[in-house]
Image (tube, rainbow, N blue to C red; front, side, top):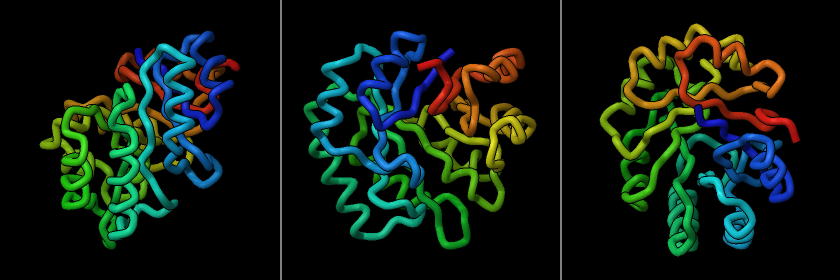
Length: 202
């Protein structure tokens, strides 16, 4: 199972690796849901740990993509080109809270060799199972991070299970899951990845 630790701290990422995390999602401004870190932080992290790193691409805390957001995302990807990042994390919606497939295709095309996670924007969609299905053709996206449409993943467990049943992608529960209570998800044997800021003890 992939245990993905979400952090904005290099020190905490190091501790998480030592305590069993096997992938890092790197952000800044986690109190705003996670924004894109600068290239220096990403580079320093990659020089500090050995486990894979995925970097969030989110210039603002909105799930609606503007032209300026797209320019910022492209600039970020260009700056990360020479770094050994496993992949990126992103997610954008239309005004009607369906997946913005046009934006999704444009962003994926900026880094066609990388792996991608579609993040918790999916929890704000009007129909989470339809949203999950709409991502199915996009093979670069191998993971969908979700709390099943709830604030806490434990409350969305049934929806998360339904999402996994309808998708070939890895549905990765995340949302207030800690190292103390993650067994709830492990014991179902339905999920191949878990995500959180306290998913391992640090």
